[in-house]
Amino acid sequence: MPYRGNIAEHDIEPYMDSFGCVVSEELSFSTPKGNESSPISRRDFLVGTGISLTALMMRVSWAGTDETNPLKVGFIFPDQGPLAQEARSMVAGFDFFLKEKRAHSLEILKKDSGPNDEKTLEALAELLVNNKVHFLVGPPSLNGSEKTIHGLSGGTAILFVTNPSVRLVAGEMCQPAIFRVRPNTYQSSQPLAPWALKNIGARAFITGEDDVQGNEEADYFAYVFERSGGTFADRIMFQSGSGRAKNVLDGIEKSRPDFVFASLRQKATSVFLKALRGVSSNSKLPVIGPESLTAFPGTLTTLGKTSLGVRTLSTMKDPQDFTSRLKQELGIDIAYAERAAEGYDMAHIIYQAAHAIPEDKNDPTKLAKFIEEITIEGPRGTIRFDRNHEPVVDMAVQEWHPSGRSFERRVLEQLGPSRSLDFGCGEVGFPKRPETETKEEEVIWDDQSD
Image (cartoon, rainbow, N blue to C red; front, top):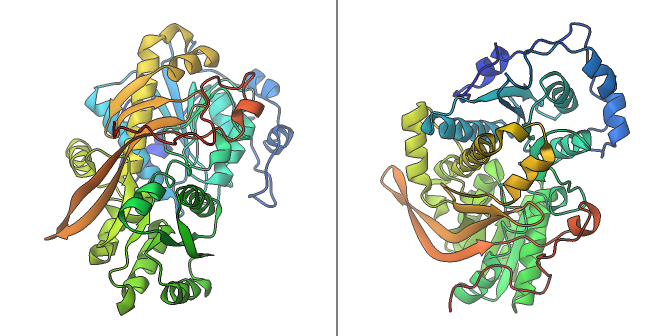
């Protein structure tokens, strides 16, 4: 029988295997081969899964009727690979909310996307057609997110995107039934620019991972920093394990910037900061970046004392209290508090929708309308959505200091709600351009100084 209610385990493999739904044995799916990173069209999705949705629906045996089935949530997450720990953290946060609220009215179905998203289309087809889910939580990778969005086009479920690239929700790949509770790459970096100019210096060295997320975060920080009056010593992006990483250290040594903006994540953060601090002249050089730079507790624990002098943005109100309560409730440790908070907030939104409009759970248009107007309070404070379905979330500048065997978090400044720009959705995705869009030249977060 499908599992209902709680879903998080320290190892999520067992609960994945325990899910089931009555599916015709005739059904089989095949994932398209070739370049997995290439954009996939709606037609390719149907062909790649080996069967049309109409034919599938005629060959599925359903477990109950719409009146008797609970609201269904489908997860497409990797069980293995570089993003598996992020996925587990989100699942744990989702489960934490359900346990806190004693919410057992949701049916949760988990499918493996594969470490390189090779199973994403197969999982999507099964969740949409066999399981007929009302909500989907997409893979954390860009490739998996793009596949899911193309495959969902014209579908019957609400999708929560968990990758931060701006093209997916506020950008050209937006759709009316897609939401994101995670700050996008614009929100994750640009509020730091005027803060750094005011509090650190006017000359920045920019670096980060040479991929879509790293370059987007670097681009938006640079854009706002220059508009605010800053200048650049240099910009060198690199890939983990490449010889170009040494070029970054050499560039910093030669250019003598006031600070470094680093768009880094996971293992790349530790490698870079330890190498940077190993050069005596850079031992106290200020480093700033998105929350991933000192992600609590996983990345921060790996960094140890090399985290000194690193300031990042943060959406969390009290990550230590949140992870402590989660562990007390679930009995597990998580690697990424911010991603767990994202899962918690998604569960909160879905739970409210399930109870507010249960009769409309099969109508994605009505579900989307309800979510558009929702406001929730959670571990990241107040969350609401703009007209492009991006989150409006409070940001703060934080710094971590080693304290015994743990860390002390210091909030340096509260920046207020951070909003996204319209990156094309108003012109492409929705019938009308949002009336309350954020213009490119207006202030990019609420000024609370008055």
